Image 1: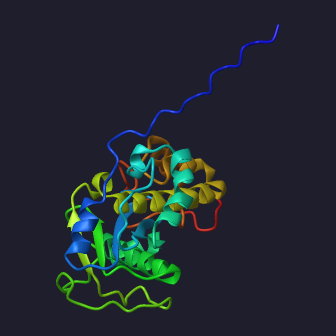
Image 2: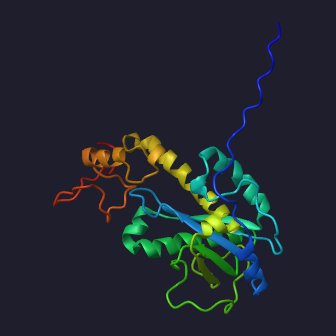
Length: 257
């Protein structure tokens, strides 16, 4: 007797309401030709880089990417599957990083700015930089101190844009990662790229569990810090253990304990 075929297994739809393009269209109607959405990941981690993603929309884009949500609402598999769709949908995209050493030396805000500027430079190599960036959150960490006003400055065009050269304008929007398609797409690019980096680093430092905790302060990570000390991938200017000693945590310099 031939068994009846089992019904196809359905995967649960992504949580949350799909982000729209209303904010991006408003910026375009106000005079912006190329609008980019930007988001960061890794801000609160103890190890690894801070990473910024950027997605620049084509003028007149009216539809988003099916299944797109803020990266925190998606499984790793869904995020990975969305990356090629996002890159096909947008005019250009880019990801930039700032290392733990840059975070320690510059401070977090300046390191975020550096990562964001590197993401803009990466997007410029694939097409053109945005003249306006829609940035998630209420704090503008991307603009240089004392930067200009909305639509006030031209943008250098071409693939040789350096990270410090961008002179466009930043518009902040709280919860833009949830409501703006370009920013949600940028969050996916940044999350996938940073998770890949942390997975690769974990192969050399398995005791810290970076393949699962991505460098954040999970219990296993903090216990490994107390037992083994820090690595070259930790942010040494941060409080890395719950109860640091007066001498500070020990440092592993060459991959040995």
